[in-house]
Amino acid sequence: MSRVEVEKKVLNENQIPAEQLRERYRRHGILCVNLISAPGSGKTLLLEKTLERMDKGTRVAVLTGDLQTENDAQRLAKFGFPVKQIVTGGTCHLDARMVEKHLADWKLEDLNLLIVENVGNLVCPSSYDLGEDAKIVLLSTTEGEDKPLKYPSIFFKSELMVLTKIDLLPYVPFKAELAEENARGASANGDFESV
Ligand SMILES: Nc1nc2c(ncn2[C@@H]2O[C@H](COP(=O)(O)OP(=O)(O)O)[C@@H](O)[C@H]2O)c(=O)[nH]1
Ligand SMILES: [Mg+2]
Image (cartoon, rainbow, N blue to C red):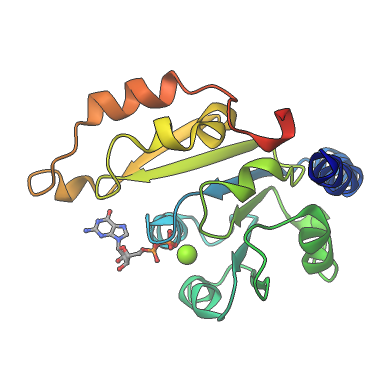
């Protein structure tokens, strides 16, 4: 009982900076997307392939989160767009204050698109609003098509699901249609905000 109360308080504290971020993005005409998946599903590779194809004048920036290392920021920095690593030091998700802090020395008026790569985790990031316009969940063919059944909240809350590692479809037992059906049927059950 008392545990539920603590969780609600922490989440509420995130909501104030999240709304402030949303308002700042709105004021500057920035679209913000929050990429979420299990570790290794291909978030950074998708971003590498996306940035590689973007016109050099595109007003895009990336924040990328991990518990440790600057590896992903290094992978993404080579395309010439502003990139910053958020090292959480053990926290399993990004929260709005971390995003706010890492945006501090960027001029938001220079951006149209902010991409946030969340910490690899299908559970915790689902409950933390970052002021984004949309959450995008990635599911790779090596994870199994039942993940939306096991971790429904993030599939319920995401505007878009990207299926990755489809080049491996001939080699792994993964039914793409079933994965889509499972994702479309996901409900908010299991989200601790709704406990
Ligand atoms: N075969 C294949 N490998 C992929 C694909 N996407 C990512 N990978 C590999 O999966 C590993 C994890 O990818 P990464 O982008 O670091 O995942 P993240 O942890 O979600 O950021 C790396 O070795 C990638 O090269 C894909 O579409 N096909
Ligand atoms: Mg990554």
